Amino acid sequence: MIIIGEKINGSIPSVAHAIRTKNPRLIQDLAKKQAEAGAAFIDVCAAAPPETELETLRWLITAVQEAVDTPVAIDSPSAQTCVDAMPFCARPGLINSASMEIMEKMEIMEKMETEEEKQAGEKNRKENKSMKKSKADLIFPKIAGTSWECVALLCGNAALPMTAEKRLEIFDALMKKAAAYRVDPARIHIDPMVPALYTAEDGITPVLETMREIKRRCPEVRLTGGASNSSFNLPARRYINQGFILLAMGAGMDSAILDPLHKDTAGLISAAEALLGRDELCMGYIGAYRAGRF
Amino acid sequence: MIIIGEKINGSIPSVAHAIRTKNPRLIQDLAKKQAEAGAAFIDVCAAAPPETELETLRWLITAVQEAVDTPVAIDSPSAQTCVDAMPFCARPGLINSASMEIMEKMEIMEKMETEEEKQAGEKNRKENKSMKKSKADLIFPKIAGTSWECVALLCGNAALPMTAEKRLEIFDALMKKAAAYRVDPARIHIDPMVPALYTAEDGITPVLETMREIKRRCPEVRLTGGASNSSFNLPARRYINQGFILLAMGAGMDSAILDPLHKDTAGLISAAEALLGRDELCMGYIGAYRAGRF
Image 1 (spheres, rainbow over the protein chains, first blue to last red):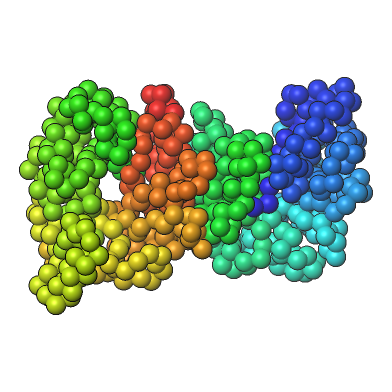
Image 2: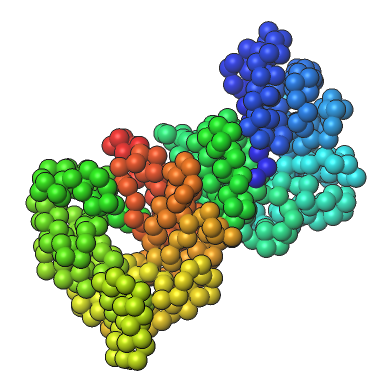
């Protein structure tokens, strides 16, 4: 299981405070603890307005790299910002995230305030075919021929909820693009877009179906997911998050964005690895237990 | 999810003490708490020598029935004892368990002490075809035409570990027998025999494969499993047990023998039901949370 440690995120008050006061101690402590707990990537999300996001990412990435050698996951809603932050990284990491979403639309929309402005932007986009460039079109060429990895969301510009068929359609289009740009599928972490459970009629069964089918179509691609999306607005969220991770692992998920310091989650993931026959003689499970990870 | 509450078992010291001192208070308290926590059956296991087992079951079942209306699961390694205890039950319950295991062999073997006696019994069994009666042959006719349910283990007299193919072969034979005795598949809880993880090369993947294939072949049959078998001899057993339950639920398990009073387990099962789309608008999850079950 490839763990992407999620704890360095500007939407968390203590992290936001560290960013504001330019105090790297908390950031470096979180980086070290997550690396020790087995994170393969340290996710770094500024959660800042566009004017300061890139500069905040630079500061965060520098702080993390002074503390650990673990590669960084650059996490931004803007594909352009992800690409712009790549040179801050001392070694190849992970871009979080690409998708088939038409980039300009989103990035323009973000900057628009009134309904009129949004409608004008939408009209403009429709009329101008050359603007139809997806996030994948920006990111894939930048990581082709490197060791960078990349999360790719199964979303276009259509609204959720989506069926498994719709997700698989986007998956096929994404993989075609990856092939065209010569990006190795083994470096792509497909995120089938986990819905908020309380509004999802069939729960996450379309997500699980999508995962199983993707592993049939392309066994080497990674499958990832944001567990905490599913539990939005529900009580005792940890059970939903953990339940999601276990069910998704059973359907082939082999990468996840989560808190590697949560002991129960670490114990359950380690148990699932052993149960799924990926941990010979349970040595990994027993070792993690002895190391005090759960 | 059909929960079979496992807490009334003579192998648990406090329960053994209550049995020895003929004090029904603890038994009735466990019955009530498990029923309140949503157990569909209260499992009752004497864990006593053959001479006293039936009498102990009678006492336990009477105690449970004075406290709750929840049906009882009669749990004994002896199919004959299960059948003999049925008249103690005020309402139809669950037999735990039937199998394709040749009954006489096992029951005769139990009473034999020396190696010579065992060999003589074995020789006798082989020569006498009429003795080849499985546990299912004893139990199925007793529950045919009633509302009694029954756990059926996918084991014959062969030693574990078993492949998915071998388990499915036994499943087909069991279902043929069920059809011959006119037992409705919806009242049979198939237990594919969960191995101890630390000795199982592929983990529980053959069990999960068996479960998925059984639901394809016969969607109405119940799938059950003893979670705690998997964690035998491993540290922090709860993670393995919970991991098993979640992965098995993802593969179609809809019944389980477990401790319904364990809050984390209850939370995870409730979460899995919602995640698998079996809990409209998460009302069951939210209700169980509000009722303090987790």
